[in-house]
Length: 179
Image (cartoon, rainbow, N blue to C red; front, top):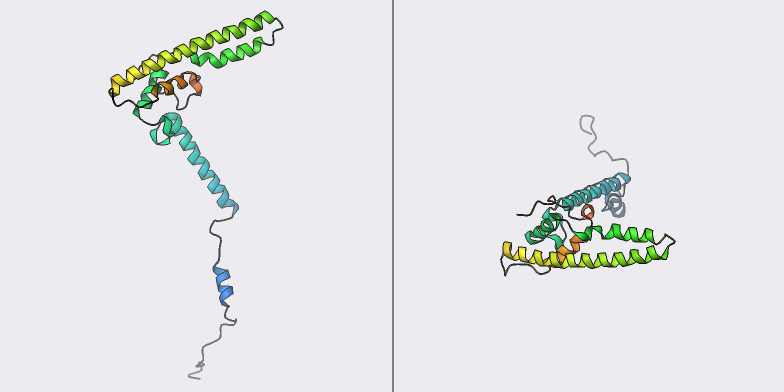
């Protein structure tokens, strides 16, 4: 003892933990399993999805799928969206034919089906003519040798979608021709 202070250090009052106990104390899950963390991850994922959905609807190139990317595809979308096409009325026409099948008169049912098939032939004609016009306009705008393959088909498939259901959403009004 030196001036009333013991020379040996005081004990800590508990045994030294074993190596297994020390490792167990340090171990924690790699991914937090708390309800708050799961809720936070879920809300972040929902926010990212909503941002991507809005970006795709607005036609932002980084959010578009590969089939819709590029200036030529944008030109085709604008070209189609600027005009009126018979294909937009295919779904409503089919609904009318379905309703006509409930009418108990066979003549009405028969002629509604015949009318639908004639209408579909006109739609196919509109699709073919529009595809040809799209290819010509794209060759004029982007050059004969720089036009992507499949622009006519891409435009034809956009024609048969109702305008309000198209993705990316139309960026031009009807009658407003693309630049």
